[in-house]
Length: 165
Length: 116
Image 1 (cartoon, rainbow over the protein chains, first blue to last red):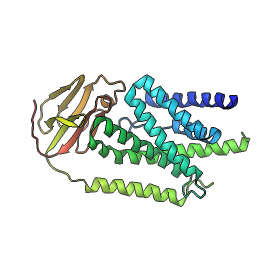
Image 2 (spheres, each protein chain N blue to C red; image 1 turned 90 degrees about the horizontal axis):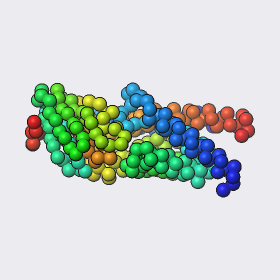
Image 3 (tube, rainbow over the protein chains, first blue to last red; image 1 turned 45 degrees about the vertical axis):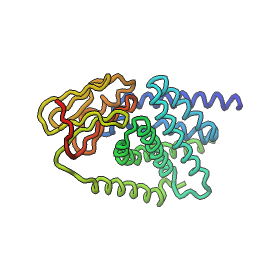
Image 4 (cartoon, chains in turn brown, cyan; image 1 turned 120 degrees about the horizontal axis):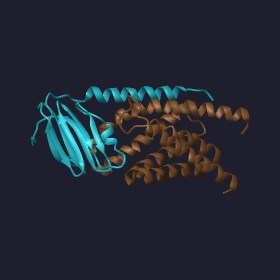
């Protein structure tokens, strides 16, 4: 890895932690308990475009480690599973030659994958299949969260193109 | 790159329709119980139709049921998502404390072990 890439990923890693932390501070009304807008996914997707697949995986790992330090092993597993599945699926969609979805659709699918992975891990950890009933509510919120991050990502990409960064 | 494509709209509508169907097809029953399970095993079933405060203590978790509502007042878990969930009522709602493996689910159906 080039020095520039290492430094750049360090900054992005810190940014993703800061965003996740700030999100956790506020109890956003109407969101179901435990659900978050997932704004740090903006950082993960940016890392993919600026530093490739390894960059995105690195950000997901940093976020999971932060969850482990601050909230324990279960939070680590939830963060890691959600992060990994969502970036894997999103990268596959970005790499498709003719992807039918725009950045908004891809963000929504990413958010849904995040929730699906976390529900599966929660079911395994608690051995309670009934947790699946929580998924429909989370999927509806994924639509909103994914659309919001999608719009922000699109604005980011356009600004980046203008400034030719 | 277009902001939104046809496939995006199809995706959004199909998710909404599926979720709507899920809620419409869910059977409703009159009696309501809160089922408390630890690691998948039901440890307590609480009748929510009784208008008296009931306390359930599981390990270091304090769960209360009163007036048709269930809530977690204290838990030793690191993230406290279960406490932040607040009071739940109504069938299908749940509180999960993943670190403790505890799930509280409101179900319709018979009460088989009333606890006071």
